[in-house]
Image (cartoon, rainbow, N blue to C red; front, side, top):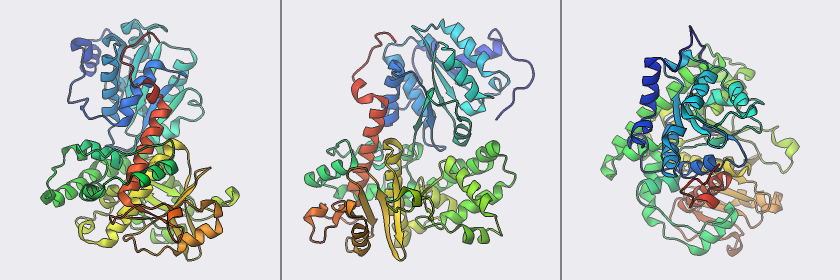
Length: 507
């Protein structure tokens, strides 16, 4: 957290006014520069503007996600949407709070100046975009003040230091702001970016969507090379939009992706974001932990073994550092499914990376994923887990894995009415015995167990299979989970009911 130093500045300062004008060019020409708001929008950008416009119930919005995931672009696209909807430019304000000038000014002074300059009222509030929010001193207390005292502003905040937002929100945010998780692109988004969208029948839940997709059996053969490229280079929009499309460039794209993610997503999080927030004095140890974790992706964590490998690291420190990596959106863990809530947290956790390409960058894997089937198998399972995790963030349906002695099922989607279990194999001939053992132990999953494989095959419902285990092409599950995650996001933002709104009819 940056501390305010020296005297505050006033809106009459020429330097201060110049920065405001540079950060808000639409006040002069009425539009957002195209280089800031790309024409290709992620689902959050397509719906967030409507949530701000209607603000029912009244809440501020915080956009959370890892570095390089496109948070700032989403906010600029939201500004463009608001202007297109008829909001006058003087009511839309952008403040990049890591600017050296703004570091010297209290957040309430900046917002008070915006309210005055925009002539905001409760009937015509200012739309205030606070980029790099965590750089403002006591940001969570000021947002609480603005909300409780009904300042005439509607606020959107974001930060590359998402760990800071997660730490600082505390009790202040309850009932005052909503968190919007922006994960790396899912496969559905990637196909849209490539101009290769795949239409699917989408229902209100993943089980219903899978049933509809299996019945429709859409052609998927053309998606295999796109999915391979996506799994290798990751779901970070800037990398996806700027990469060449020729298959011959696959090596170049992979190495470029690893270098960029290591420099920007990993090293900045480990050596800047996390130490800044949690006062870590040995970030090198944090990097070593991430390296060791990357070597155990999709595996069940053994804290004692990991601590020994890291020169006697204590388990409390291990648990704390792992939580920092999770808060920085680098990894996530899943608990073992037991069917009994009181015992779920007492067993080992399974580790995944938010994006498999980040794992490759952490290990500096180079070209190994291109030729090593075991590497690709890990990436495929991580890909499925990442999509289900993104869906879980929107739907609040919990995800687990299951292990009992030697038996293991990769992923358990604990939907309250129609739960699902997935085993991810490299071939459709992958052994299904552990799925059978799981269903036998937990009969509520009968009719919901699937083997998932990258091989092209005819999707089949469990009830239509001789052994009661269904078959799913990997691409079909990715598309279904991605489409459901987008649908849940739109419902959460009210986007489905408001997508046709183009003019403001009054707050």
